[in-house]
Amino acid sequence: MKKQLTVLLLVLLSSGLAHSQTKTKQPVKKAVSALEKLFTGSGLPYSMVNDSLAVIPYGGENITSYKVLVQSISDLVIVFTDLTETLPGKIDSTKYKYLLQQNNHFDIVKIGINPDDNSVNLRADLYKAGTNNILLKRVIEQVANVTNIIGGDFK
Image (cartoon, rainbow, N blue to C red; front, side, top):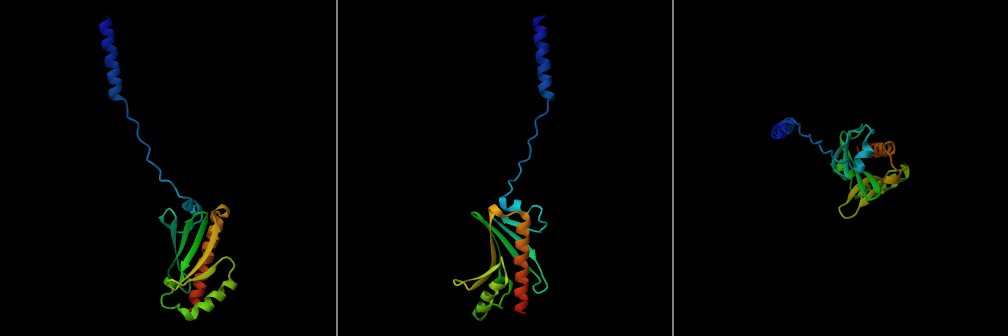
């Protein structure tokens, strides 16, 4: 009797193990970077190059297509366009004074010249601590609009 009970328990146990389902592994969620979190809810068509760099395509009345870049460095978020790349052949040393004078006309956006490669950048710097997706969107739009305005000045 004990043998039959033992055999019956072993059969039940083995059939239970044979018919049990294996646990499915949950797919691993990709960690969202802090910069990408700032873009959620902004409605901007961005593409992430890496965890700290995003590219937003823009186009305007004066410039048909250009890129606004958003880079996260340390505790800063830098929003910028490369005017030399956006306006090829239109910016040279004779335009530097005019470009620097334009800094007086814009509040957040500033124009800078790199003497090493004679490139001209239009940028705005924000602290991450005080930045949310609404503020970031407004600054990106301002950088894009000023880029378009300056493009119109060099037509």
